[in-house]
Image (cartoon, rainbow, N blue to C red; front, side):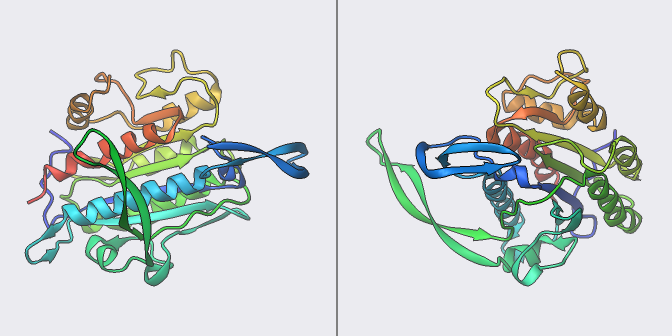
Length: 302
């Protein structure tokens, strides 16, 4: 069966994250407070008279990626150090049609980085407050150390086609060098339509790459500020609201059986035809997609 290769230091796997860094990622999906603005302001031709407080979509995605990098580092930590079971890349696309590696600090400019290097080279450590059970049925805030490898950026357009082509150029030599490995998992997180054309053919070219264990997996997460219901792991185009949603669905890989099993264990409703795709997603849905895209490999570590 495909997607069953054991993951060893001599036979690693790979994760690649494509992150939409367009200007619309500055929107606040879950404002904690609405307060009057000192004066009306304009954005994209619209006039606003209120300011929302809360983290932007870009900040929420950055936190999710940093938490996942920390989780991967901890999962690979053994008595002899962090073992290189994975290589990981984070590619940002936005700005003036730019597509660039998005690690900061010592890893700046690197496309794929071994997990041991990631674990040992956060760009900085921040102090965050986290609510923990107090043992009496309540919650208490505690300071925690939060490593940062990837910072929030939001400006410009959405060159998704370029991002998918960049992903293919990164992974093509990797699958040649690691022919017996569990194939790479690519997770594309976006909040809007591609700004440089139809990405369907570029997505197909990316998924055409393969190892002996299966083709590259491409999962897509569409983030929304709308109050409409999210669509998670659909098995067909039926019920998708528009051509854009249908396009993202068509770009997304069918979940392999082992990932389907993991999704069901996590309480998600999936079928044999479900794809790695969420539409109009809130951040918790994006995190679920990333979780099921990575958890299966942990059980294959040797």
